[in-house]
Amino acid sequence: MKRGEIYDVDLSGREGHETQGNRPAIVISNDKFNSTASWKTVTVVPVSTSSSQAQRNYGVVLPAGSGGLPSESVALCHQVTTIDRTRLGKCYGQLDAPLLQRVSDEVKIILYL
Image 1 (cartoon, rainbow, N blue to C red):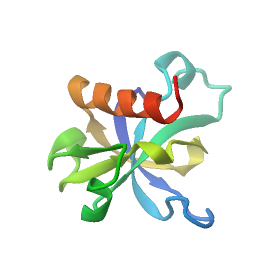
Image 2 (image 1 turned 60 degrees about the horizontal axis):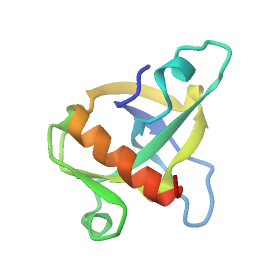
Image 3 (image 1 turned 135 degrees about the vertical axis):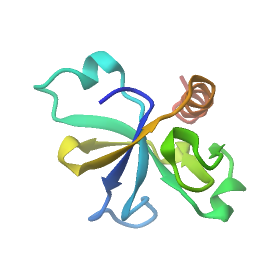
Image 4 (image 1 turned 30 degrees about the horizontal axis):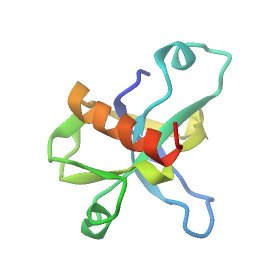
């Protein structure tokens, strides 16, 4: 797996206002970390198709077709999370560099980096 790839992930078992369910998510952890077999986790930004999410701060709109996504979606940069790699399903594709940079910039704002 590589930074910027979008996978179907299983976020079941979460609570409260945490993003839940099966949904796409963008891998944002670095490629050295991602290629280390002994690390069993990966850091992702969940994706939603909810139009209301597009109105919130810190979301990045992903046009239909971006990274293989079938419909317009929103990267939920305020919901960045680390998951076990066993939660990863099929790979949709790779997000292009400008969109990945926008996601990274929003995550940096959220994390005050």
